[in-house]
Length: 125
Image (cartoon, rainbow, N blue to C red; front, top):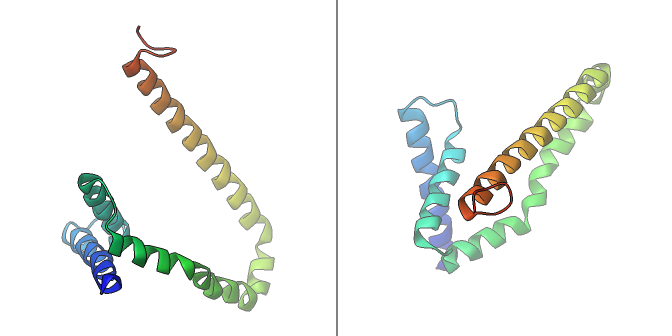
């Protein structure tokens, strides 16, 4: 019964996210909005229900199976990928660098704001 309750919570959040995404015609996928809804609900509740924890751990145990279709796609389209290898490599390296840079900038801003509020280094005493 706990697995059913946990899965029901996950599916309900995903469904709510789909409703919001389609209802407001947002360019964000419904499951992503559903995860935000679940995060907000868990933050309000203050802890993760045991049924949701059990379901999440069970799903994470088999997460690697989700990479099988991507691996098969790489093998099937190897010639196509090889033909455009350099643009793919440049795009991957550039997007990784931008992601790291933005993440570092956001972290720095958050730490600076936190230090300012708490009177730490760089903030008011």
